[in-house]
Structures are given as C-alpha cells and as structure tokens.
Amino acid sequence: MSSDTRPARKSLYASLAGYALAAAALYWVFHDVNFPVLKRDIAHVNWLLACLGVFIDMGRYFAQSVRWSLLIRPVAKISFGRTFQSLYTGIFLNLILPLRMGEFARVFLASRFSGADYPSVFSTIITEYLIDGIWLAAGIGAIALAVPLPPQVANPARILGVVVLAAVGAFVFFVLKTKEKVLVSAGTKLWKPLRMLFSFVGIMRVSIRRIGRSGVFWPAFLISSLDIMFHAVAFWIVLIAYGIHLPLITATAILLFIFVGLVVPNAPSNVGSFQFFCVLGLLAFGVDKTSASGFSVLFFILITIPQVVLGWVMFSRSGERLYDIWGRLAALKLSMKER
Picture 1: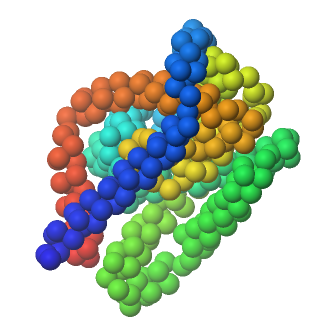
Picture 2 (picture 1 turned 90 degrees about the vertical axis):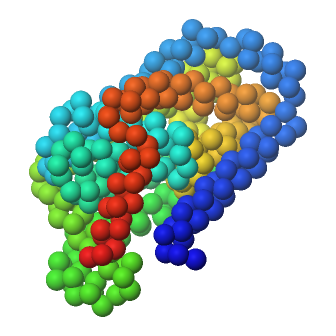
C-alpha cells in the first residue's frame, strides 16, 4: 500500500466508525419509543416559545466570534468579519464532515485571510479548548454542589472534570514551562511523526505565550461563559416548549452531561451521540423515554438549522471549495512531514 493511500484509508475507516456509532446510538434512542405519543407531543409543542429558545441560542454566535477575535488578535491581523466568516465556515463543515474536520478548515481560512502561519492560528483553537475545559470542569463542580445529581450523571461528570483539569494543567505546563532548547533537542532524536509534533508544539508555544501576555486571555475567558449561558437558557426554554418542565439548573446539569459525552469527535454535527446523551440525561431526571427522544431530536434540529444557513452563506462567500481546502491542508501536512 502506498504512503498516499494509507491516510485516506485511515480517514475512511474513522469516518465509517463514526457513522456506525451514530446509527447505533439513534437505534437505541428510538428503541421502545411510543410513536403515537411522540406524534402527539410534537403536535403540542409551543412553537413560539421554541423559536424564542432558538433566538437566544443564536447569541452564542456573537459570543464565540468575539472570543476568537480576541484570541487571534495577538497572532494574526484579521478583521472581525473575516474571523466570523472563518468560524462559521468551520461550523458548517463540522455539520457535514465527521471528526470535527471543520476546525482545521476554519484555521486554514483564518490563516489565508491574515497571512499568519497555520500553527500560530491553530494555537488559538487550542486556547479555546483549554478555556472550554476549565468552564466545563467548573460548571460540573458548581452543579454538583447545587443539585443532587443521579449517580449515572454525577460519576461520569466528576471523572471527566478531574481528567479535564489534569489535561489542562499538563498541557499548560508542557507548553509554557518547557524550555525551547529542550523541545528542539528532544525533537531531533525522535521518530519523524513525533518530530513534526514537537515542531508544531514549538510554534504553538510561542503563540500561546503571546496570547497570555497580550491581556486578551481573561476577557476571552469571561466571554466564554456567555456561550454556555446562552446554550443552557435555550435548552431550558425548548424543554418547556416541548412540555418537559425542569428547573433551569437541572437543564444546565443535563446539558453539561451532554457536553461530557461529546468530548470525543464522532459523526458530523454529533448526530446520534447528541441524542444518545440527551436522552440518558433526561432519563436520569425522571423524564420518560418517548418525551426524551422526541425532545432530543427537536432541539437538535432547531439549533442546527440556523447554523446550516449561516454557515453555508459564510462558506459560499469564502471563495473556497471543499476540495481545494482539503487539498491545501494535505499540502500543509506534507510540508510539515518534510521538515
């Protein structure tokens, strides 16, 4: 097998595995569902309230864009409009491609728009994940103190909270505290793929230190809380519109549990896995499976439609084709291998 076909096959196998898991999850979600009751529940949805929830959820778009615009400022000169366009092109591609491949596409577009190197822009995505990890762990801790969580929700959430904090701490130590000459000397003695990783981390290290010293980290950190707040309130409002009456703090606990389940990349737009963890969370708080399954699908569709429309508009205005983006990403990967 040629070296060119191996990555393609690995990508295909990973995609097929993601689709298989999504299909299995959806099968479980709809197994034993009372479809006449499900049809009745859909007919009685308060659509005005549901649309209000979707409108509130769209506040996340602004919060995410402002956060990335702040984080990218120390490493690249790019307008807010171009940042927004790159971000929602990536979100759109995440909806149609597995394993969150849209994240790489948005970095590529922001790099092209700004002229900054790819690893420097990618460092801002890593910083976003670090921030999200801290907020997720903090949210799990706060909810656990305020709400008596069922064991099937509390135990995985606590474990992940500890893992997330440990991973954040390890990454920050490795990137910010490890000396440059240690990275270089270690990298020259390693297997070639690991040398690529060390080279990439070395560039990100400089960029992340620049972000930390620029004063934008803490404003971006605080703005990230708005992302969670908009999503939690929207989730709660659509729950009520569907006829499931739970307190806001309980709805937030279920949403954080869903976030825990979606940490690992899978099928496009997390289809299947979102419904699976949403139903599990609702069942843990006493919601019957038919109502939980119907809500999981309705909420997923409602929040996905605006993302598809806005993302498609941003992607179509980028002047890029999907084939061209992946071709250039492959060329970038090849150039890094040759270092």
